[in-house]
Amino acid sequence: MLTPAALPQFQDAIAEAGLDGWLLYDFRGTNPIAAGLLALPGMVTRRVFVWVPRAGAPTAVTHAIEQAPWAAWPAGWGRVVYSGWAELEAALGTLVAGRRAAMEYSPGDAVPYVDRVPAGVLEMVRAAGAEVSTSAELVSRLFAAWTPAQLAAHRRAAEDVAGVARHAVAEAARRVAAGEAVHEHEVAADIRAAFARLGLEDDGHGPIVAWGPNAADPHYEPSADRPVRLAAGALLLVDLWGRPAGTDTPFADQTWMGALGAVDARAQAVWVAVRDARDAALALLRERLAAGAPVRGAEADDAARAVIAGRGFGPYFTHRTGHSIDARALHGAGPHLDNLETREERYLVPGVGFSVEPGVYVPASAAGDGGPAVGARSEVNACVGDGALVVTPTEPQQALLGG
Image 1: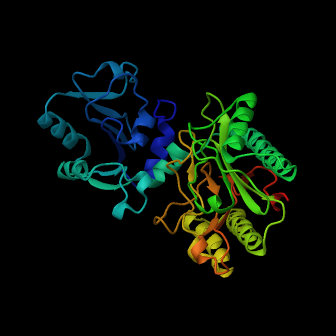
Image 2 (image 1 turned 180 degrees about the vertical axis):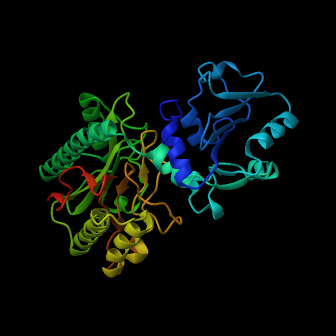
């Protein structure tokens, strides 16, 4: 959040990036990064700009009818009040003419998570005389990075989430082996109840519990309206995410795989491929960080993808290896492990967190042996420290649960 205490950190990052300032823009929540950094209370329905220079005081450009949200704006910082568009454009010219300004803009939409400023606003800012650059690296450092306290809370939550997942899969396997009727949506309900007992919250969705062929759908949702009974001889995918309720702790987001009874060789091979791909991505990150070498999320994606392609499952790994996790969102605005869906060019800098979750999803028509569709995913989380990688939970899954 942009505060007087945080301003030196903002200005150091702006200067290191060779910029003259960061121009924050929002209109009715279209830019969640600017909205999160400004945290304006009450009704804000007009265009807002805030110029954060590399030195000196920030200046807000605000509409005349919406001054109440700015009551806590520091007295030593500037504020320009406008009513008409001509006043707005004149104020922008005064602030940014001849300057190199960062904005939430990604050339070619390479990274959609930071491509938040409309093309028309970019045109207006450039017409005001500014050279616009992407704020992508600033977003990583100043918006997405975890604090030490957030990392500590995440690590504790991750162990609770892992415990819930292990118990859910073990209990499902036990009940199936005993011949009891148990359905996907009932396992999901049990997970939500366990979260409530532990004081954890999700983001209003999930968890995913997918049996057998349903695990081949990456965004499958179990439902009581279409109950699916678990049966022996197939994989069970459990994807769950939680954090201490009412906090800004980054979510612990994990996927665990179980075997309900014996599973066939193809399902076993798919599971081993995703596990090994996960570990290959983690190994690359650990090696590069320990050596003090820069590393991009795209490179970790490449490492995971190479393992899966080498096992013959390349066409069935159809999503990125991992998504950013920040304190504001499960799917955050920081760098992703992605060189497939987007051109993730940002470095994994200290403090950024993300999931590592390769997956393989083979449809029935591609199985080649007349068998059903099969899918598997293995997911852990990681946060970049100084020269090291913190991985949660402390004991990532190495073998199928249940059996």
